[in-house]
Length: 91
Image 1 (cartoon, rainbow, N blue to C red):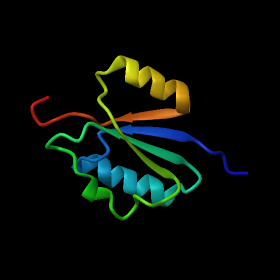
Image 2 (image 1 turned 180 degrees about the horizontal axis):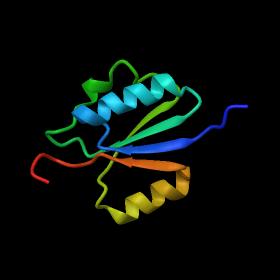
Image 3 (image 1 turned 90 degrees about the horizontal axis):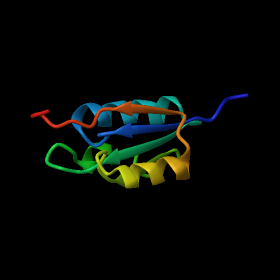
Image 4 (image 1 turned 90 degrees about the vertical axis):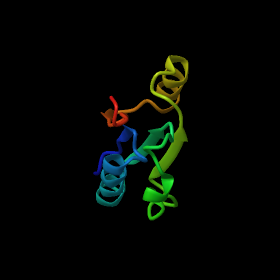
């Protein structure tokens, strides 16, 4: 039996994050991939237009520095893993 996992990818609308999300969504259809992105100049949801309708992909807009929001997101979804890619070029 295939185990279902819930994976959070922060910064998933950026160049590297969108490529990783596309790979995860396609290669692990039994995983639920959640993309958390603030959508600043570095993020663009058009990078993910080919997976946006997939049942195992979800986008949520938010900032990793908003502790209250992040705590609630974790409480609601109960992630099995996190891949942290949220960073802008000046970081």
